[in-house]
Image 1 (cartoon, rainbow, N blue to C red):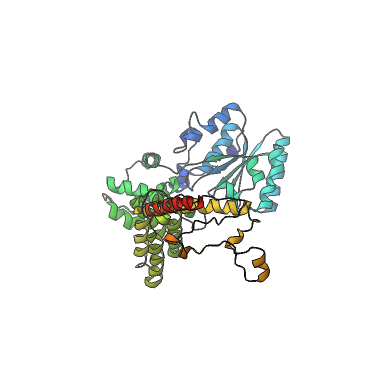
Image 2 (cartoon, one colour):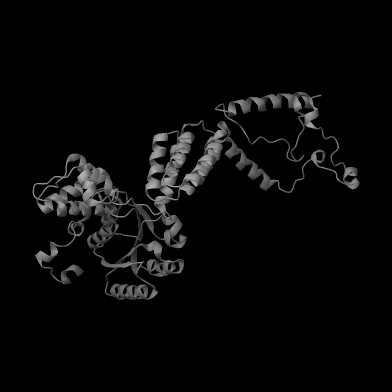
Length: 438
């Protein structure tokens, strides 16, 4: 028997005052939009229900994608008791109470689906407390998180739960939600086509947000009034970007910026740079990341890239915000349009690995200084040839430890300035071979 049968009946006039997003909550998994890979006829959750065997899960996804709703519907369709707690408001005492209730319920033959919102907020010890009740079947745990479970959850907990990814709503699923809202309200949104498209963008993939925005539009509209994009922006005051500088949004956007620069797409790079500025990111952090891109992805293909980025950082220090942001934007475009090379990056990684493996080897004696008579007697400095005194200012000596032999780490490509560096290296290699054969 469903626990909902014992819930108090809410008068219709009160129910209609509930937020639109609450009134439009799906009543079955088949009503859920935007997560067909999980809730559709061939979805993961549908298959679990049909098999009659649910396991513990972690729902990972952005806000407003239906994690709480799906968990509640899942318990109903699987015939499980539903318990919900939030890691923000719950402590050890609350967990013990929930676990004890679940144990008593299980003795009566009914299993509990325990939904834990913001599960990543629990510390490691609190997360470990779930392990015994998951293992003995007291609860089926469904944890919801907006953060990457790999970073935020215990390995022991993750090993006992399947991670299911919820996607941000696309325009199609957001539009479906708007149509349901219009059907429920028995009226169309008073927006032009362009304003409607703008409202979808403002929602930023959040289903709850798109319904809240629609509700604001209906509240603000006078009889016969239709809002264009400018009017919509004025009425809803534009929803702030979903971006937490300390969490996944931060890392996702900086990753997108870096890959756009690496992919030589200045337009995409500027877009992500602008999004991070708009979200309140520290411009000097962005300046530091641009410097990193200059040395990792452009390298010596264009040695000016590092100079440009450092100059942009200094310009921002000098001008401040918002004027200094243009200097960082200029550096961003410069990097995106520069020839690309990660040859130094790869060479340094290889050299670092070689150093770890051969860190105990001494350099060859002929390149070591001999400041004492004893060291001279041991052969330090013997045979060293001063390159500036050699033809072409190149001696062709071997500088690696004798047990290693010559190594090649740096392999410049035929691009940008490194084309010239490659020619020099090939010329020196030729001279080295000639002189070592004498």
